[in-house]
Length: 383
Image (cartoon, rainbow, N blue to C red; front, side, top):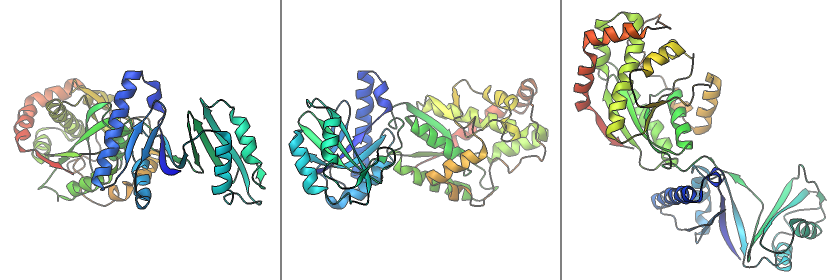
């Protein structure tokens, strides 16, 4: 008998054999990189339906569990006892020896079995094992459960199924450039794209020296929390203050937010193509603020011809806040700081901007020429 981790994946099952193999290869690599980062041991064996993690030290179990909890593509996992036999009597005797004290006579319990290629039915072994215990069987809401997974010539016994993040392995969907601020929404949008298998690269538009570098530090803090989800995080810092000031002195206040947003999108699209990103992502939510009406989002989107994704478009603020709390970014985002987007924002921005008017303004102020010039001043760092 040995302790191993039995790891389950879900959505990958829906892919063709070739795609599934490719995704599982990426998943294996993501786990291995995290293991190397934390100096952990362990061997990964992937089958068509399960991943088995073996040859680790008992002292590493908690850290391994934490890594598996935060790895996209893993639906759930269990720390299991592995028996080198699927014979009913061997399983029965093992549970009688090792698990008999797990269920007391005051506990309600159930035995949940899954049998594959073993020559007997799940109910056979469930009934036989249940007869070992004096507690009361409760199939709908038991206090204790013993799981038995018997397949081929092996059996796995365990008492807990730990949920993972599910989704797809990071990197399986390609590269994606995220426009990230220190606020609540864009980190959540980033998380949603990681869950769909994107390898995110991040761009932050800052207004230093008009404001402090705190927004930059907040973004770095947020991305540091994402290191448990994604390996190799790259952050691009773009000096946006000169563009904001140029737009402020050259246009009517009611157009400024849309002009800022279109400029950011154009800059992001140029950088995305250079980095071979297939898309850009923002944290916009429909009708949350004036710049995020359907009219304004359409005008902003018109600035680029690359795929622009808005994973939070149908979420309300409370839903976004709850996700931010769950992923550990809410406290960082709530820290007070001057925001790049609101620094030059008018009190009453236009909720329905005309594309024709915007294009006339952009042409008259030569904004794209300034954008290209400032591309030379970007900073790139690894988090």
